[in-house]
Structures are given as C-alpha cells and as structure tokens.
Length: 303
Image (cartoon, rainbow, N blue to C red; front, side, top):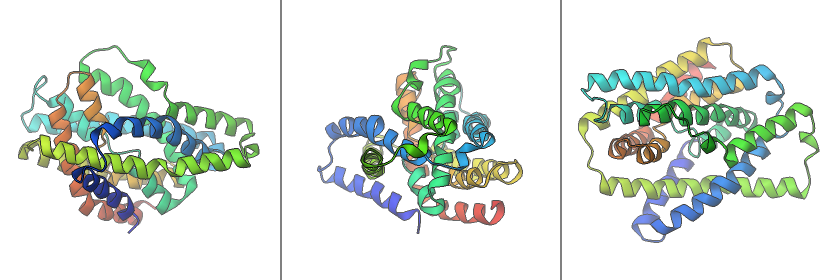
C-alpha cells in the first residue's frame, strides 16, 4: 500500500495530459521550479538534523554505493544487450544506460519516506548525489563515446543542497536552523513530489503515443531492470557493512523501474531516445506488479 500513492499520481498525470488539463507547455516551467527550488528545499529539510549523517562512514558508503550502482547496472546492461544482438551505434549504449539506472528521485523518495521515515530519506539524498555524479561522468561518456565530462551539469540545485546540508551537519549548526524559514522550506519541499509525479505521468503518456515498443527491447530491458539487477542490489545490501538506513534505501532502489534520466541523456548526446523510452514506459508499468514483491522480499532477506 505504501507504493500506491506515487503510482496513482503518475496515472493522474497521464489522465490530465489526455484531458488536456496538463499540457506539454506546462512541463518545463513546472519542472524548473520543482528541480531548482522545491526539491532543494526538501533535501535541506531532510538532511538538517539527521543523526545518521553525523557518521562519516554512513555518508561515504551512501555516496559510493550510489555511484557504483550505475556502473554495475550498465555492465549488466551491456552483457544483456549483447545477448539481444544490439551493437554499438545501434542502441547498445542506450540500452545499457537505460536499464542500468533505476528511478532514484521523485518516485523513490516518497516511497522511502513512507516506509522508513526521514532518517532513510536523508541517507537517500547522499546516495543520490553519488548517482548524479555517475550519470554525468560514466553515463555521459558511455552514451557519447567521448571522454569529455560536462562538469557544469553537476552544479545544480539538488547537488548543492546536499553538499551544503552535509557541511552544516558536519559543523554542528544544522539544528539551529529553525523557525519560520525552516517551516517555509518544509512547505516548499512537500509540494515537489506530487508535481513531479504528475509531470512524469504526463510525459510517459506522450512517450506511449509516440514510440512503438520492440518486444526484444521492452521485455529484455524490463527483465534486466526488474529482476536481474535487483538481485545484485539486494545482495549488496545484505552482505556489505552498511547502516540500517542505507540498507532500507537499497531495498527500495532494487524495486525501482528505469529512471527518466537516460531519455534526456540520449537526446543530448546522440543516443537512441526511442530505446530509452520503451524501457522506461514498460518497466514502469510492470513495476506496478513487481515493486511490492521486490520490497517485501528485500525486507525479509536483508533487514
């Protein structure tokens, strides 16, 4: 039941797009405010006062696991893509990147918050900083077949809010940030995810209408994303010396469908957006069925 609100908002976004209430021209300005204002406020609110993040080893492990998840996921994606007879220049890189990165943001965060509470959400924010670094370094180099890294992409609101929040926690002044300003941050942050999930649903219905799925890509990508890679993530959560909060984060991450980021990266760096779109849409739809089971298995095995 904890996962249903997020998916219901995605479905509502799709319905609003079909009803022409939420139009394509609304997407960019809404997401601009969400990404650059509301989401950073949410991140700071969750990090400030987090006891879990006062432990340097928790911060280090969370960041490193976030970075390595994508690397391992892309390696698995490459292997499966080659089995599916995809080739470089004909979709292999886009396939590997798309199945290699799970949804780590606007769908995952509300589920982590509902299941585990603010401590796990704070750890997820640090984990996500590692994911972002991996996307804009390893991911971009993979997609573009170029060694140039767009470092400027890493200087964004969410990344800066994580770094600032961790610095405030480290020097011990985070608990002094209270009162009306903190309450304003909380209000702004709480609105980020409903809006982002509505836009996600609207964009997904656009992709369904434009892209005709290939069974080989859609099924192979979904099996890789929703079955093979979750086993690796859950095994890491089970056997690595991680904090309870990071284990909780990984249980949810294992269950997530493909992220939306590969679609953008494919468009920007000469990939195959159609392949990314198919994997995103089909894995997200199938995750309505698989996500509760993977989380239940992870709770039983890991925690």
